[in-house]
Image (cartoon, rainbow, N blue to C red; front, side, top):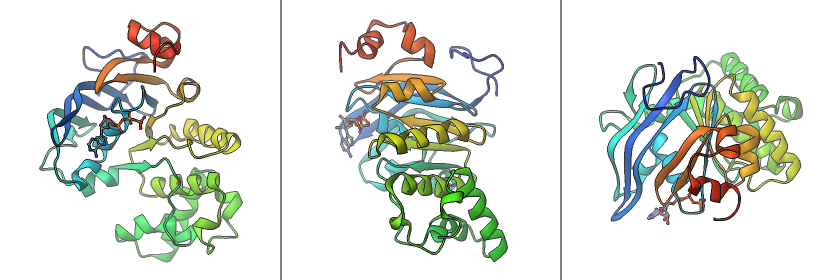
Length: 267
Ligand SMILES: Nc1ncnc2c1ncn2[C@@H]1O[C@H](COP(=O)(O)OP(=O)(O)OP(=O)(O)O)[C@@H](O)[C@H]1O
């Protein structure tokens, strides 16, 4: 899908994986997202930045219909179109379970299931009906390799996931997210509970992962957004203030509000 008019392509020939169109979101009476539009480029990392409470996580959670799990939440406006099949992820006709198979999520705190390392990764495959032992083993190995964890755990697969270090647990959660072969992975501040070394390895991994998947990441850390993302979106009070190529947002933002935030004058 070529970039529709009105979106800054940034990279020649870039294609879109999804686009958010005039999206509104309400937590009961609270209007948390206001007419948000932004493109999600295929096989790129897009970072959502902005001060606390501006709606970054709310926007991220729309992508896998997590808000559906709580009563009173309401999507409105245009929706989120996923390419290449033009599926509106927020349409009531689209099954949220299907959406979560195509779009997986990694949370702020590593949250392995109380199961073995192997089962943490195999779980989503079993849920999808995979029963063949060899196939499961191959897929688990591929996901753990994809998450740069295989070398550290290949001889510990029966141990509890919770026995791993924090950084390893987060890579296990990334392996779990990868196992189902998603098209997009959502990361919600994935390194905020980790030390600098574990953070660096997750950042390196995210950059590698974009070969396989499209990535959308919420981060409080502007240096992190600058280091790992191709595109950055700056949000404030539920609105999309500015979207662009990361270098442009950080070096020469178009809007004063973005500049004030980037330079630390605000936020
Ligand atoms: N379940 C909820 N019910 C009502 N309001 C909510 C709920 N979750 C978030 N909000 C409100 O929606 C707004 C956006 O919250 P959100 O968590 O998306 O912000 P954020 O930019 O991710 O913030 P942070 O960086 O602190 O995580 C905030 O005003 C928040 O108080």
